[in-house]
Amino acid sequence: MSRARAVLQRVPEILKQTTTRHTTTFTLKPLAAHGHTGFDAPEVGDHVTSDPPQLSDIPGPRSLPGIGAMWQYLPGGKYHGLDLNIAIKHMNTEHGDVVREEIVPGLNLIRLYDPNDFADVYKAEGECPHRVLFGLLTHYNNVYNDGAQGLLTSQDSEWKQLRSQVQQPILQPKAVNGFAKQHANIASDFVDRIARRIDDTGSITNFLPEIYKYVTEGVGTVCFDKRLGLLEDNNAEGEQFIRAVGETLTLTQKELQLLPLYRHVPTPVFARFTAANNLIQKLSTRYMQEAMQDKEHRPTGQLVKHLLFHSDLTQRHIFTFLSEFFAAGVDTTGHYLAFTLYALAKNPKVQEKLYSELKDVTDDDITSGALESAPYLRAFLKESLRVYPVAPGLGRTLRKDAVLGGYNVPAGTNIVLQYDLAGKDPRFVSNPEEFQPERWLRNNKSEKVLAFTTLPFGFGPRSCPGRRLAGQEVGVAVAKILQRFRVCYNGGELPIKMQLLNTPAEPLNFCFTPRSM
Ligand code: HEM
Image (cartoon, rainbow, N blue to C red; front, side, top):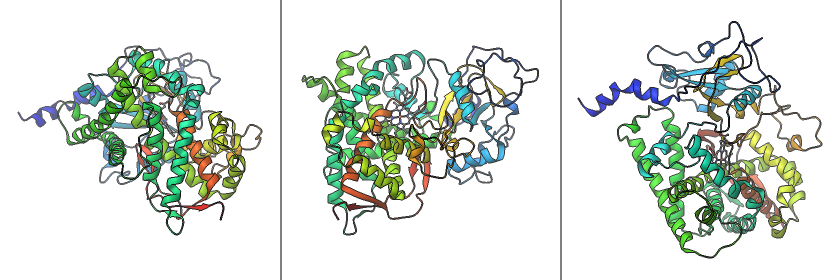
């Protein structure tokens, strides 16, 4: 029998392995009424209903026997050719705030659209939340890194140990502030580079690659305590690294719509992923080795040395974590900065208000945390992420049974919280179509946002550990760019596509007018 045929015969077994199964079962007591349990509701599992609607009662795209609902994305299906973001919005309009996609028979994905239900998911997630998303990276680490997983792909005790060791050096405000000086220097170089590269009309017609260089330099200095030289001309190695990160994201998105056959036979997708990740790891290995040889010790701003010399992690885990963290800081922060600049360009009044707040901020102020306490900048960054979220949804695998939107959903079910859509829904945000940083200011009384509506970095113990670093990099860049230029966008509405992250779908054509003019 051919190898391919043997694998095909094992498809049901492979599919079974993609669903996380838990042996713990909770007796779900009936719910008094369908609808949201709300955040004040008693603990999940405390209710009893006589006839509770079950997982199979949740509405969703039509599933065919033996095939499931995946065909809806293929020719003839209603989501064929649509960007996933649009398909997900259609499902909400058609089926309501709780949608079941039976991806393949027996494997369900529940999409939630109501922040009250998000709160219920977080209540049920426990101290080691599960997220299954990065199948290719997990397999890569199994094959090439002796099974050592980083934060994105580890679970349970492995995740808990790693997270507890890295939490302080990457998330504590003091630690993040330890990188502020380097970030201010990098942002100055970025602004100089913009000034050098604008054409006669003040434009840079393809700005995203420039942004990637800035943020890679920023996260590189955090991880490896060194400047990578990406803002200098002709850094082929750095540019290759950036392309490799983009490739891993594209392939991870592609993998979501494929059977995980790569776990059993070499597939072209896994071969491409391996080539890209090898490149990421090659660069990380070199930087890590350099750091190990450098005996100079400074108290802050040295993640690699902190982990090497002050943590209980194995070298293999440190290496896997650092190369993953290095890569995780590129497209995420890059798109964040791209969308904030676009938001500035499209909202000139906001831009001028922000300029007034930031025009006199110096590098010394930045180092002593002035941006952290600049209220309008903070509000602006929050509003940018509400309108232009970088992560399109939040994934969880339920650790225990939960009642979501009135349905009993068993442990092991995969859930996506579509906070990106909730943030634009007038039921949860007042005047969502208006770009209003003011809604986030403390004294604001009129613009309401329901709790749990915008979760751009997630929530709880598994939320994004890079959020403060990303905020610092983007905040410093916005401040320095505004001090020197007025920003405008040479184009209309920016199209956005989902490529694991929300991604600008056209070359970014910004115009930078020097403020002295
Ligand atoms: C605007 C920038 C960023 C956004 C919007 C973002 C968003 C997210 C989100 C939504 C999650 C999942 C949270 C959850 O499941 O509750 C996450 C996790 C993660 N992010 Fe970020 N992120 C950003 C920047 C960064 C940066 C700069 C780094 C690293 C330098 C990073 C590293 C990670 C890692 C390692 C995880 C997995 C954490 C875990 O599972 O314990 N992120 N991020």
